[in-house]
Every structure is written in structure tokens, then in C-alpha cells.
Length: 149
Image (cartoon, rainbow, N blue to C red; front, side, top):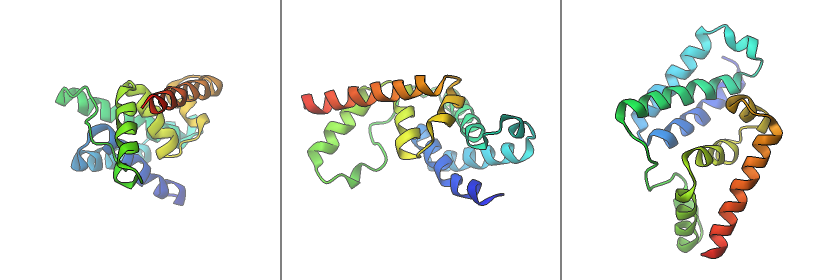
């Protein structure tokens, strides 16, 4: 496994944990994601291993959520204890909770895991410009919500 993939392990785990809110399941799915990556030759055709990893992880998380019939994001979001102000933290939590699941997922992938827009475009089968526009709209929605307080 290349050094780049080793660095991505934590990002994939964090993504799975964010979606599932279960450390054990997130670890299992992260491991399964990397096993499938290593066993598959098709990722070479894609040319973007990061997009392949996130696609596999996303599909495995969806399968897990379907099996649990879980549809909503839990109230507690990772990293909230790092906020300087409790009020800002509560407002941010509420603003994020008002986003739909796809919008929350884009925010997580882009700003928490630092996934490049080009990889997000491949993951969602959209142009980079469309993903960039969607992320900007989400950020504006969050800013308006935070300003309204």
C-alpha cells in the first residue's frame, strides 16, 4: 500500500464514522473498503484511487444504513467540542442539522476530509463546476443560518 493510501485510511474511517456513528462498524467498513480497493483492478482504469475509495466506502455505508433502517444523522457531530464558543457550536450544529444528508456529506468530504473538488466530481458523477457551485450554495446557506442566529 502506498504512503498516500495509508494517509487516506483515517479520512475514510472518519467519513464512515460520520455516516454511521458506530466506531466498530466504521472500522469494519473502512477495512472492507481498502480490501476491495486492493483486490480490484478496475480502480486503475478510473485513474483516481481516492474517488474509488470514497465510492466504495459510501456504498458500504449506505448498505449498512439500509440494514439498520437508519435515515437521519444523529444530533452529535464530530469535532464540536473544539469550538471556542458554546453558542457558536450550538448554532453551527443547528445549521448543519438543517442541511439535507447530501449537503452534510459534501461539507464533510470537502472541509473535514479535504477531498479535492475533482474527486468529488467523479464520486457524484458531476462536473467540477457543478460541485463547486453546490458547495458554494451550501456555504451561503450555512452563513445565512448562522447570521440569523
